[in-house]
View (cartoon, protein in one colour):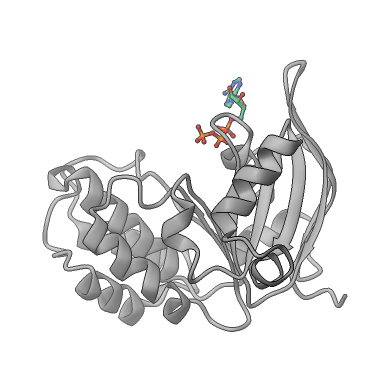
Length: 233
Ligand SMILES: Nc1ncnc2c1ncn2[C@@H]1O[C@H](COP(=O)(O)OP(=O)(O)OP(=O)(O)O)[C@@H](O)[C@H]1O
């Protein structure tokens, strides 16, 4: 494989003496939409934080497009819960902050995304409902023109109509030379748009597999396959 893409080599992470992630190795090419699966507490958020270099002191190597040191951070857009912002700040001011902080932030794209999600940027952050706040986070995350997007359970509070709309448009917002890793507990909704699944179990990777292979070779939906594989091991 070329250096283009995300490569994890024997990645592990401990918190004090507790093993959270253990010996994860995988190569994911660019241009993929990958869903990250696993039960509560298995380490999905931790893995995203390790990939983003937010959790220091991990074992092994994380390499994105050939960059394995902390410079890879500039190639990664990770959904942020915006907890560092005051509730009185307007969405436009949060956007201005992102514009200043990220040279790859695309103002036109964020406006298109907000328009698409029907979020008015004149509102104050603290006035957003849970679901609308999640939509705003998705818009901010996808508005960067970068190589890797990490969305950590981005749709948990979003209503089913908006979820369908956002999910079916995800491909449109991700460039061909980028990669999207999205964690969810609602796999069935994403089945039609994802390329691959990455399953975590017992602190490590159980499987990384192409969804078309699953359908053709196993004759199962991705959700059926996930349940079967998870319970078998
Ligand atoms: N600050 C912390 N201190 C100690 N343990 C932690 C800390 N943060 C996370 N953990 C532990 O790390 C493990 C992985 O947590 P993580 O949040 O990554 O799981 P997850 O797969 O994202 O879970 P969920 O599906 O519930 O969001 C859990 O066992 C959790 O208790």
